[in-house]
Structure formats: C-alpha cells, structure tokens
Image (cartoon, rainbow, N blue to C red; front, side, top):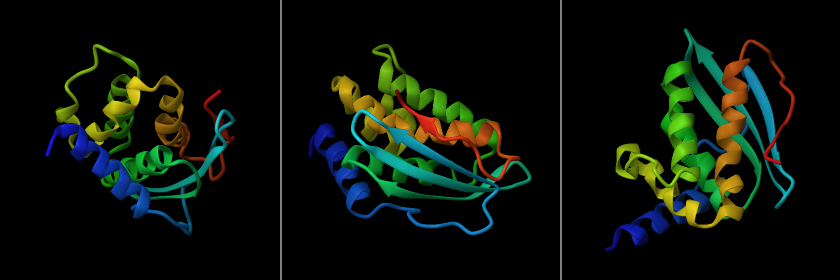
Length: 151
C-alpha cells in the first residue's frame, strides 16, 4: 500500500467513525468554529486538569476532511499540556500551509492531513478545528468563548 493510500484510508476512517464526537458536560471551554466558505461548523468542548487537556469532544457538521481533522486532533491533544497542544497546532498549521513544512511522518496519524496542502480550498476545512482549539486553549478560563471563523 502506498503512503497516499494509507493517508486516504486514515481520513476516510476518521470521517466514518469520528473519535471523541459528542457532548461533554462541565467543559472548561466551549468554542464554536465556522467556515463560511463551505458551511463546516463545529463546537469544541474541553476539560483541563492542571493545565492538561483531560477530555475533549466535538460536535457539528462538516465535510470528510473537516470531520477527520477534528477526530484526529482530539486524539492527538488529549492528555497533552496546553502549551504542547498549542505547539502541535503550529506544526499542523505549517503542515497544511507551508511547502517547507517538516516531514509529515513526525506527526504520526496527523500526517494524513498533509495531502490537503495540494488543495488550497480545503486547507480551511482541515484547519477549522485547530484554530478553534487554539482559541479555546488561549482563553480556557472562560466557560463560553466567541465563535471562530476561518474567513
């Protein structure tokens, strides 16, 4: 199996069976994200314990890339400290937007998102959940934060 086929399979699997999808009671932060270009929207909720993401869930509607990216993201950041998650956001953002990005293999399953860079109109689909996460982490002491848009 070629690497591109493996990446495609990861995206399809996470779209069909998204991980950490659903509501989260007593969240420390709840942020809505919206991509007006295609209509993707999600609500991201997370719990922090000692500055570590102890739980994270998302709900909403989006294309396969948006849903898969959110699913992969929640798996990747659960258990990470706030600063580690923000650093991962920066690495994924570079992966999606920078041709000189680091090797995708360093990102594990998140490397499946690397092909999105070839389709500029889809980058916002893949990055919506990540921008929403960054917003939540930068102000997680608030229970409800303003919506994030990828305009």
